[in-house]
Length: 119
Image 1 (cartoon, rainbow, N blue to C red):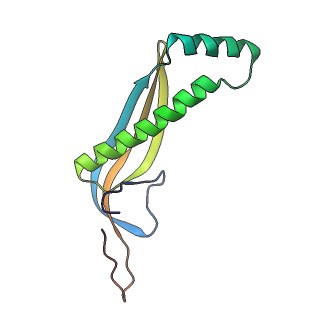
Image 2: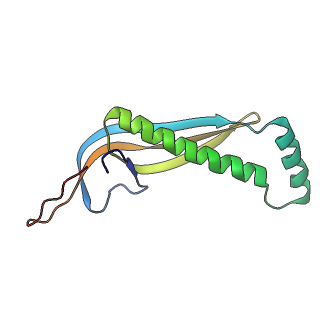
Image 3: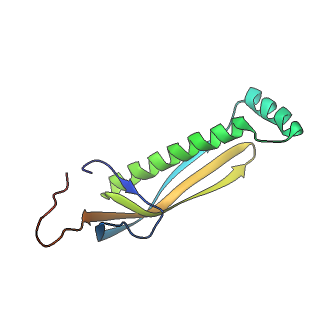
């Protein structure tokens, strides 16, 4: 866990206790498909069904937003982010995706007999 930022959608992290709440953290990305992909997606929309070009775009954007959230949390001194959520919107022909949560410092809970070391 030394360099890994733990992210969870819950307001707690089972097996860990929060020792410090740092505050709001986020990762943001705004992306667009190229003109060719937009035309292909537009033609597919006429037939109905899943638009694979946009599914791929949103999945990649979600991963990048989550990665940026982790980078931001690390810069703030956190080792975990709780309450992670995603929000998206459209800006013209572009898609904005925001990952956000609360940056915290956690430590593993230990039983009284055996201490657990982080890192």
